Structures are given as structure tokens and as C-alpha cells.
Image 1 (cartoon, rainbow, N blue to C red):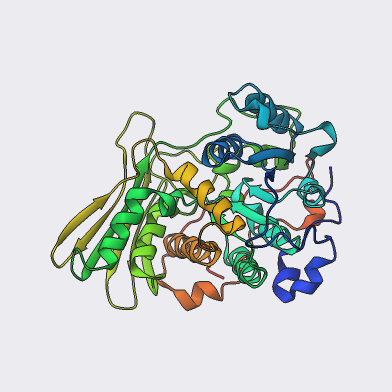
Image 2 (cartoon, rainbow, N blue to C red):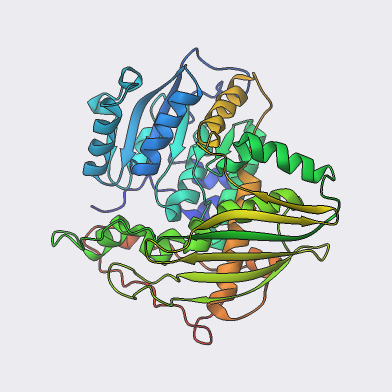
Length: 419
């Protein structure tokens, strides 16, 4: 199943938005802030567990939204998601007719040509910059899962899309749900207003169990490329490693408090127990990083995967001149549905205009900066990562199920080259 021509090139969008716009027709140009139909129509791109749950969170976050279109590279993923949604208590709001179910690598482009008002992006992270750029070109509002890319080339594309969204007054709400959690909003505001005095240090932790999608191994019908996609969390090129895919939540909170990204990082890491095999892939199981902000404040970042049943710690610790505060996600995680409430309020004009694209893209790049330091053994500055030419995504001529894409070699400092 080869990539169709509707694919938006990552580099074409960076080179010029007009060049990337040719594949899409702008649908409902009037759908900007302050104008919206009585019921907003959702289109879901990426029908795995996170995308399916995002739809359920949206139903909980607003009574006047409904799901009308779905797209995924794999038909079994789409049909499984649809079955789960239709079996739930809000099945009446799932109105996805057969001709609004799109399968294949060009499925997202087909969905964008429909009358959906809001697009949910929940595919594996490597695809996200291309999809985000296409959604904004198509004039749609977006709920975009984190992270906003896996390499600097992709994040620059996301930053360009975020800028265009501001110009078009299109709403972007991210899956960095701590930005919507009531306790985080309250405590971050208090810290910024001086409740702890001057911030002197920050500590970010994500210590937990690994995410493995295909513990049973490979279906013999799957080629190498399809296998990597289905087991995406174990493959660097599409997940970005744990520091990018998961630990972004904690790093993003620290950047939020500090008002922007750090200026440099020195990091170390490796794989102490995680096998370098077909199932566990080529990512690290631990990275520790020392980030420095422009004012000299340091953020100590620690992400770690242990086998199931081992230590767990997911939080941020903020040290100030007057005291210390530990931040944890609220029990029950209301941020997961509050992010949808504020999304629709922004679209309808019932609340402030929201575009989290730039902030979360910068936090994504912060995490990539930490990864690249650990992989290369070098100190990486913000200017270095902003100008990095790394592009992990395969080119479209090999975007097919039966391709024999070789996995990226396991990164070893001294051999791994920062580009």
C-alpha cells in the first residue's frame, strides 16, 4: 500500500505554505473563532487507544460534539476503535457512516476533505508534524496529541503550522493535559506569582514501566515496515524515545513555569535491561539530563523504564527561595476532558483563544535536545537543536507495508553523530 500523492511533504511546508496547500481544499473558511455550528463535528486521525480515549474525553468535555469521520493506516485499528465507541454509553454521538471511514497512509488527507470542524491527531508521533500542517492548511481546528514531532525537522514544521494557525485564528489544543488540569493551573500561576519566591531549581521525573504494543511478536503477514508501525513505541524514528514521547509532560511543566525552553543540556543514558531485539527495538530505557535556562536555573530531568512491578514516580518538584512544591497529576485526571472543554470554548468564542502549538512544540524540541545529548555524549544548545538537520522520517517512496526499512542502529555515544 504505497503512499498517495496527497501526502504533504515535511520540507515543502517549511519551504513555503503555498507549496504545501495544493493537496487540499480549504473547507469551511468561515469556521474560525466566534463562529461554529450548534454541534461540532469531529474527525479522528489515528484510531489506537489514545485516539479512542480522546473521543470519549471530548464527549465528556462538551455535550455538543459528535464523531463523524475516522482515519487510520490499518483497517483493524479503525474498526476496533469504532466497535469500542459504539459499545459505550455515548454511542448515540458516534455517527461514522461507512463512506466516512478512511484507511491507508493517505487516509488523513481524505478525511480533511470532509465537512469535519475539528480534527483529532493521535497517530504515532513521527507523523504528527505532517498531519498538523495539513490540518491547518485545510482550515480546521485541531486537538493534537503530544509530542509535536520526533526530530528538529518535524518540530520546525509544527512551529510553522502553529504560526499559521494564529494567523487564521484556528484553535490548537495539545494532549499535554497538565496545561488543562485545574490544580496545575492554580499552582503554576501561584509559582509564577512568587508563592515560592524566585525559582532556584526544578526536577522532572517519569519513572515507570515500558510501553510494548506487540509482546506476542510479529504476525508473519506483516512486512518490516508494518511491524515497526504496529510496534511503534519501540522504534526511535516514529516514537522519539521515552524522553520525547512520555517525559515531555514533565519537561513541558518546567518550561511552562520558566516561561520558555532552556538554552542548553548535557545528558547521559542507555539501555541497562531493555533488550535490543525485535520487540524492544532501539530506544534507551533511561536518560538523565541537566538542562540550563537563560537565567542560570537548572532543571534536572530523569526518565526511566523498569520492568513491570518496579519503582514508579511521575511528578515535578519546584524549589524556590521560600519553599518547595511537588506537582502531581490530579487524581482522576480532569485535565483529559478539561482540555476538550477549553478547545470548544475557544472555537465558539465562549472562552479565550487558545493555541498551544508553539509552547508544546518547543517543549518537544527540548526533549529532543536532551535525547540528542544523551545519544551523542555532547552538550547541545538550543541554537544547535533549532538548526539540526536531523530527519528521521522515511521518504515517501519507501512508505509501503512491504518495505524492508532497516531499524535505526542503536545509538552509542562516540559513534552516534549529531546532525
